[in-house]
Length: 254
Image 1 (tube, rainbow, N blue to C red):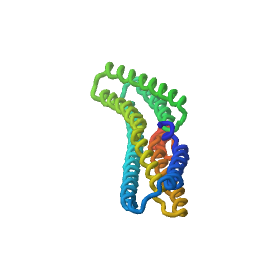
Image 2 (cartoon, helix red, strand yellow):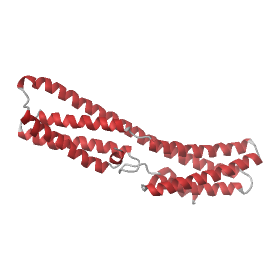
Image 3 (cartoon, rainbow, N blue to C red):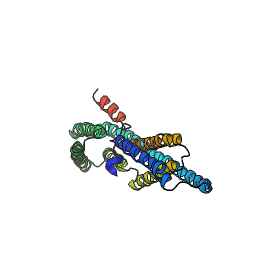
Image 4 (cartoon, one colour):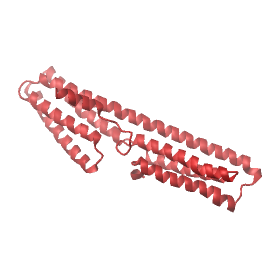
């Protein structure tokens, strides 16, 4: 399931085929095997309407979840940039050569965080995570040495800022991992399949069958692909760009 929902374009094609097949199954197979009796058409319409309503609610609810997670990733990117920029300024409060060392490490750290937001390659992701972890260790060792050498409130402020930098990175990566559960995707796909099949089964004319085989599968597939695109941090077209991190990088190079 995860490889499918991580690639919205592939999901759209697969769902379009599945939904069209479900509609064709209901319109061309089930109606011929067991035609819909006239006396149950009203009851069938009630069940069909309830199923489509449930599908619409699920799609709307899931879309809301995806948008909420997207907004959270954007906000955390901004917080991360603010934390790095603030700590870069606070580094001047450290006496001795450690100040320039911390600032140089923060610049390297910023470069790695920008790469984290931009890359789609899993192998490069491992390299970025390893480099980020190493830089964090080096920065924390410098903070620890400075705090032990001069345990003052000013040093404590700088150490607190470094703690914010490391924590913001953890919060951002946790938000990227937090996705719509696979069980929710499975439920939506199952209900969409049966909804399409019921639409085809309940079609009253050949022209209606053709329209249903095209319109309903297309709209459902497009909706699910949109949700997948928003929910996938790296696989889709709608992505969180490191705009604040890039602005910070440009300001530090002046």
